[in-house]
Length: 261
Figure 1 (cartoon, rainbow, N blue to C red):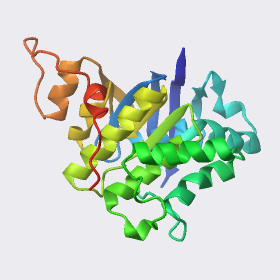
Figure 2: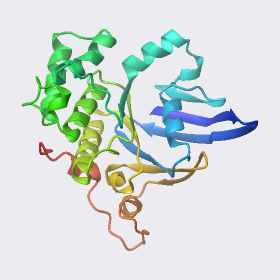
Figure 3: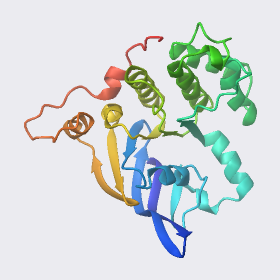
């Protein structure tokens, strides 16, 4: 069963007397434990697609389903509650609260959805330790590096055990080494915890950790890469050939300990 599904989703914007199909009849599904990269040039519709998957925008036609529930049929209050319980977000701007500690920033999600208790607080600490932040729990965001801040954002997105995790350009402001660390960690946790994850990225190198790659152009889903050789070739800017051997799956590498920058 798919955790996340888009069925012929279309989103049209009206500007200067013209209709712009930001997303045009897109259909796909993402299963539990699967990490997908959504890529495409600027203006291809990938960020709009992510907002539709989160229920932040409603499609003009088609539907988005999470756990077989259509987001478009929910009342506004029900949709807000559903997002708090079933969807996790990470963004390019990590949006950490500057006057809260690392631990408090993660526990904030638990407060918002009403699940903060002794067990969930322990889970928050365990997740931060898993992310290599055990020595930073009482630090403020300003005392962290960019990579460490993004790992706090990952912990916040996962602490309430959502069904899907959506990441919009989570590495755009990081150097290459930190970016690899952040995506490897995110992919590893999604695989380990059985979430459905989608990452929008402008950097093909980060797709090395994906199970599939969805390519968008002009609002349409034009290609899906799923073979490991294809994904490796895309990440390295190469054209895959039938002779290429499939290397180890990315989540096998991503489960290695992540060094603290």
